[in-house]
Image 1 (cartoon, helix red, strand yellow):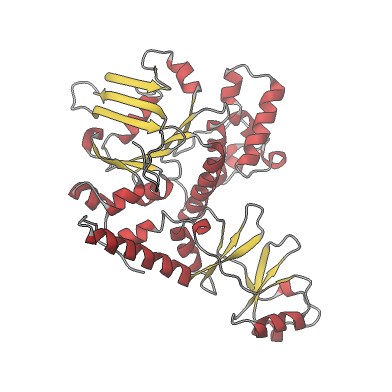
Image 2 (image 1 turned 60 degrees about the vertical axis):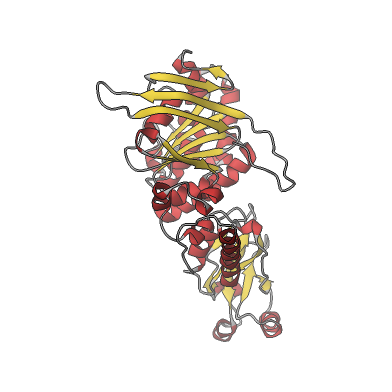
Length: 403
């Protein structure tokens, strides 16, 4: 359960949740979960992934006893919680489901306040916590706290669902395909936002998905499950991709392991390139000089807070009249990512960008630099080099993909 440091030492891993011989049978049927033992490290995202019907959701629901185990034990902070009051247990564990489950007749503030009210928090404390959580998930309290779920987009409702799960500041969160019902673009961005958030809150999270790509992107560790929640492999995403335990795991991962490993690398891990930039108020002569002095085909225009506005090239300068600002022409500054975005998501963004680049901004939206296609290719080449070195050592590998 622990990873060795480069110096060979092994850090101590605190186990937050321990499942011991857990099983669930519904009536006389074959067990949905059979003799599952698993240790969940504190502060990590552990993904349960496997084919439909393998028992992963049943397993997760037994942890907060929405489904009662038929046998076995569940330990939370070394306390056996299989016999405690299940309502009290659930108040210690945040829960986010695919369909979000917001109460349609309650405002956003009242939805988030559900558990704090059960815990008899005073009104001032609840109100402060609601505003704090809305800001945490990127929603202005003044704009959203008095709205109703039907007035929000799917992505916004999902954010509120995450905020509600964190309302009583639980140490543990359960997430059952939380991004599964959202369009792919919003899903990628919410995943990235949640990973950024997890860097701050360091919750212990059990996350159920059927999507191995999502598992690789989101998980510190992944448990790949066979039928009846039998563990085929429980390890880090890197180790699973490099050394699948057996053919079942290799087949579940699928082809293109190098491309999947792009989900393990983040923008913050690569060297950013710089393109010429100019402020919105800059003159056309200045922008022309920037173009002439660089080997780039466009200048990125930034506002007074250094947030990307648009791209301007020589043709745009020629077409634009003297009375127009630089921000009125050119091409929009699309394909914007933050440092915690994966290289896989960044590649997807830049494939639709005019200049085959992704603009990197910080959490306030200020320009940091550029990731281009050469950066992605260098990363893939390094992965292949690492893979060749590993193969020389005699380990087996899944089929590789190419860019």
